[in-house]
Length: 193
Ligand SMILES: N[C@@H](CCC(=O)N[C@@H](CS)C(=O)NCC(=O)O)C(=O)O
Ligand SMILES: [Zn+2]
Ligand SMILES: [Zn+2]
Image 1 (cartoon, helix red, strand yellow):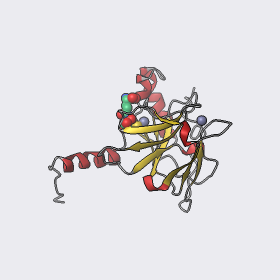
Image 2 (spheres, rainbow, N blue to C red):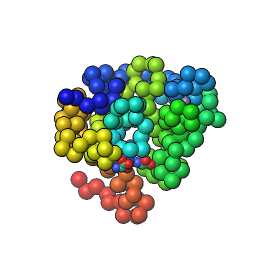
Image 3 (cartoon, rainbow, N blue to C red):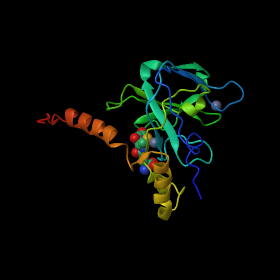
Image 4 (cartoon, rainbow, N blue to C red):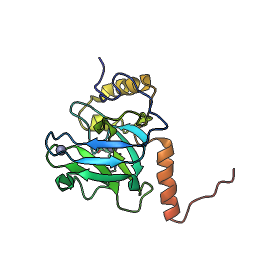
């Protein structure tokens, strides 16, 4: 048995193109969709199992990457957008008709301030950076999507696709957040290596 991780990766991972430089995201509305224009490829693209990131119907993971905030603009349907959770670090702007999250933005002082979170499956263009790792895997158990005894089967399926699995973000991103916090607290240590 295999899990419906996400339609973009269930049958393997397609490499992106380093020369690709953006495209258009559209929500699922047939009439007057919300569209977002991106003038850059994404970075840090990953599968996220957390409960807050938008997942297509039936999938247990979200696929989410980032673009510089300056590379993102809402091209149409802006009046249909609302912020899902104003108290969250990532303010996810979703279509109030179809529920699709169009972008997530950080307004507070945070390591990832200046980056917007996007789901490139909403685009028809090909060349977006491929998925690099899987984050927040244990969160799929928390949401009742997978039995606790099956969490390792989910990890095996992800590893079979070549993805490392983590129960938070990847070590590189966790270190970036930790360094930001240490700096803010005036305790950032200099490397003696
Ligand atoms: N176990 C929690 C984890 C939530 C979580 O921490 N999500 C990460 C990855 S997207 C995060 O950075 N959230 C910040 C936010 O949603 O604002 C859940 O599934 O709800
Ligand atoms: Zn919509
Ligand atoms: Zn998430």
